[in-house]
Length: 238
Image (tube, rainbow, N blue to C red; front, side, top):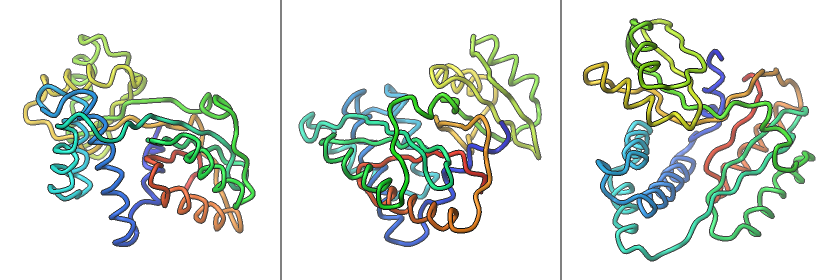
């Protein structure tokens, strides 16, 4: 799988305004996860992982605390997940994950991003079959065999494991995320994950050039500007 999982991070937070949008997206996701599974990170593994990831992305503590406090009351907005797929500039494949309290509005906003850049939004499943929905765990280490043994003992269906430049990277089905993380945490003392996420990873990446590259940047910026958009995945080799 190589390092294709890094692609989606290339268009994030270039300015202070962009950072504020990233903070907002984390705040919304933390609120949703805390409201659904409880506000205690020790009893809500999804929340704990999300908070750890937010801290690594330098999200201020007050943003995290505000989102958790908001979830305490149990009221507030009701967000639902929404996923859109389609073909971007140069025919690249794109998956867009959203959290929305108004699906009609969100669909309209996402479709407009496609339309304004002369791209084509598709139906569910139109491109996702060309991606793996994977848990990705990256941590410092060089004992690949010990990591693999621990994962196998925990009945994790490991898709791939790599060891490169003192980093071990584990790929597993997204449904095995918590089992994989727990198995590695139990095996390696004080493990600190550099990457701890679930992503869509393309089976193959493709280069993009010229005008298509310029339009792609505009397209991704438009999507990332939408409050409802949480993550954008694509198969472009940047």
